[in-house]
Length: 313
Image 1 (cartoon, rainbow, N blue to C red):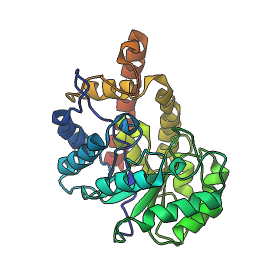
Image 2: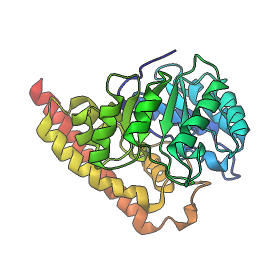
Image 3: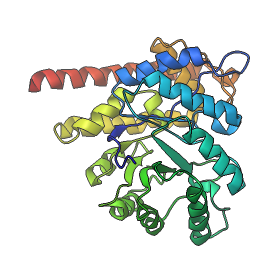
């Protein structure tokens, strides 16, 4: 069983769709190539950004399989995809995704207990599910905000890490005190901490986080990759870049993932704006201009990074 994944950037992949609401598998390959060119360390497929809650199980399976084919082993691919309420159905969903050969299966934390149920119920249900899945498959955890956000306490994370089955945590708490406590909880375990929040990213890296796994890697994966890899060597530029990335991350609340697809169009990808999670018809001219302007500032930071690299060379 794989016990460690490379640190760095793991985009929560968006899914291209056609005008007749089918997954556009033709566009998936150039999208994967774009992620790879921009230095990502792995891909998180079949997640909320992918519209997994709006997909059939067969579509989720096909998307996981296609994502693996698209990267051809160049980087690992992890996937979620269990969206059912019953544990028995979740085992079936998880098993089908695992059969595609993904490098790890990622559990959504709100699937193992209702909002009002205890951590003990949650952990018991987690153990029931993983007990019915192959013993050689590594797992991850994803504090998904839909249908409700279930943040895991540091104590519960430590308990999960002690099983030795978990390698990936996509954390969405967005609080430095909780990030610090969670990092302490996973220290010296196989469970790696990936921050989904852009505003706290640099601080979390300084505290020991493995990297970034969030929606803004669908816009600026190269800038996030640079920050994760070079913040120690270029601390002043890292602070400046962090200020920009934290500010730019408010675009997550604009009309995501329509705006991410538009950004990728500007990057030259053959992707349409069609979505299942949002109405592309609501994407205004002003919002398009805002994305264009954000992309222009991103290019300025790329120039700064290149200049710094040339100076140090």
